[in-house]
Image 1 (spheres, rainbow, N blue to C red):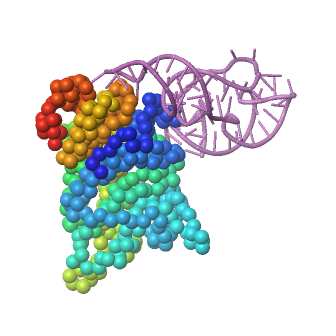
Image 2 (cartoon, protein in one colour):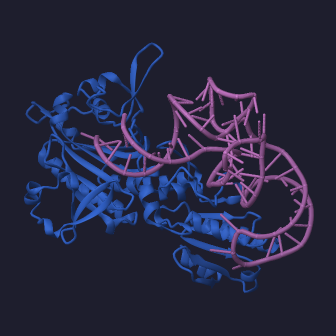
Image 3 (spheres, rainbow, N blue to C red):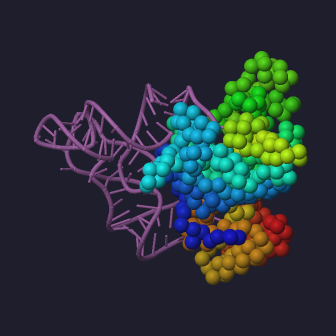
Length: 418
RNA sequence: CGGGGAUUGGCGCAGUUGGUAGCGCGCGCGGCUGGGGGCCGCGAGGUCGUGGGUUCAAAUCCCGCAUCCCCGACCA
């Protein structure tokens, strides 16, 4: 869909933020009608919000495809047996499980992660060194029974995540891909406008490696505390900050700056640990069975939307980066006269035909309301058609980030927007 | 899970020493307006989160529970 008429959009904006949200991202997203709160930590994505989600996904998808990722979708219902293999069915080991039962009593889990499930699936398809390397990813709703949800859509019990898994022949092949993923992730954050504020961060690596890598975006509403090394463009998560890790990374404490940050990505090297647990092997050139080298890579899609809402907003509302805004242009007609409406309709059709996504405010409401909504929704460009602009046969253009307006002919407007 | 706060029309809120609810926004109708959420009139909409208790009488006092928010703990 290239555009939409606000007169037909069922959602609407609010002047006041809901009392039960203090997180800025939730306040703005609810006021603008992007999301609807269902319960603590659970949000529905309404038409405009879904557009933002889909645009973020598209950026991620392009970068994952660029490193040969293959997209798929796993299931939310998962068999207990799969998780018993690694001991992670146990509530004492994984405390965020939502579990249920089929009518015949069979126990099932609701996917809080898809690691074990993906490996089970892959075992049906991979068997030879000729099949490797491979990496696969999905966009999935993860369900986690968190003790406490917080910060609006930044930490929920149900959230959208891109998770990717790499299978390699050996450590060298794995390392190569791992590094390529770090680069791809940084391209994602850069394209989303977070490049300058996002740091590769050394964090707890679990049992398999000394560190895992997190991608942390500087954000007051974030849950993590990181220590930045500006000149080296790296950071250390508070959880692993210590003399040993400082020495390992070759940095000194005095060069680090403490910051609040939100984890927008996390990647892990599993080595062969998990493939050994799950007996995930391939046949090498000599006909011997070898364990697959595994990596796991996540990006929090809905959390990214929250972080961006937190960082890109002002007193009037959201200010989406163009690449993920639900539309590029907010087109407002300021009169219900035939002439103005006709011209606006025409411009809407023209922009849309030229591939520009437009939110067309064709409602019969006052000017102030239209402008307030244009600002609240955070659409990058606002175009006005009114008696005034028509008298000079021009259109008014204003950027969301600027107070200046300019009058442009149809041609130059089109040139500016394309 | 520990601590703190909250719950009254769709949303934001007020409601005094207990006497069966009111304002703003929004919504519907009519009119005036028409470049930053405008104005006037009329109207619809609430078993005051829930279950008990005290009382002649409870939104209001007491007890339990639920939900939501915040801090902490937790967090592949």
